[in-house]
Length: 405
Image (tube, rainbow, N blue to C red):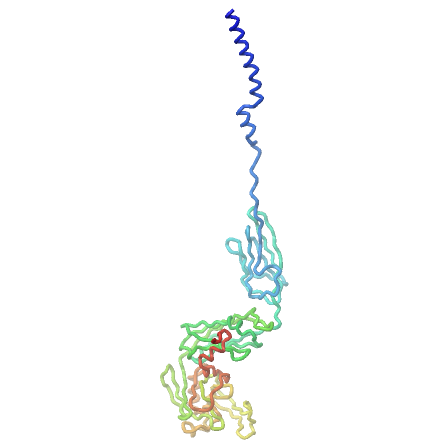
């Protein structure tokens, strides 16, 4: 009886084990869960999005009335510029270059007035996709243009009294805008100031005469500039000149002697005759303006008819002009007896033919003649009378000087 119970026990246990196995498989094993969760080998991560290329210009596309000196740039963001083409209405290309990184194209020439430029830029994004941007930029069309001229002329050598003059052929109403575009660079450095003489003329000088042997560079960067009332600068100018040795003549109307100094050393004395009581020589500082080997003195140029009392038309030798009003140093052989003794001229400095020739050969444009104790003061506008204004008044003629408060 004991043996039968044992056999039945084993059989029951075996049956329970067989029934339990299918139940475990239907719930799934740990290995089955891992296999079900694992991705298939054919799946790939999604690519990162590429930022779109952004092309811009400075000035912006579709701009109009652009000043032609405005620097033209084409810029790119989120990509690289490959080509940039800028053409005018005739198809001529505006020169320019890309930077090494391909991020900016810069024009290497000024734009032209009254021109519409077509801009085409090709760029690629980080993914290598190419795109094209197009548009136009139009420059201002001036009412009229004005050309500046600079004196002294390029390559010349002048005396220590020569002011710089910039003259326009149209009226300038925005003097400050023009003056900001005027620059004087000297070697050695010399401080000075611009001062407007009229709506068309502005002069520059130091407080005192130029140092001898100064090198001067003048830039009038007015191309593209609105000088007022729709008038624009036609072109910019760059002029370089030199100042020579210091040469100054000094004459006292009561002494009748013209003393000539070179480098502050007296080199010659000349008996002279200045203007008579009816035609006194103005007192002041003159600058030699030009010279003529032979020049005809004509009283009608200052309002006295040739056939009127006091009128004349006389050729003279070795004429060095000191003013617009007709003051010269010149040969006057007819007044040699009066030279050094009394004033008998119509305002000029009469000297002998030999002395006039010496002055003509050794003094020249920009050199100085100072006249003391003679007639009324020389006007600042009469020739280069710039030195006859005190420094404070001269600086006040600048459009950029703030008035004292």
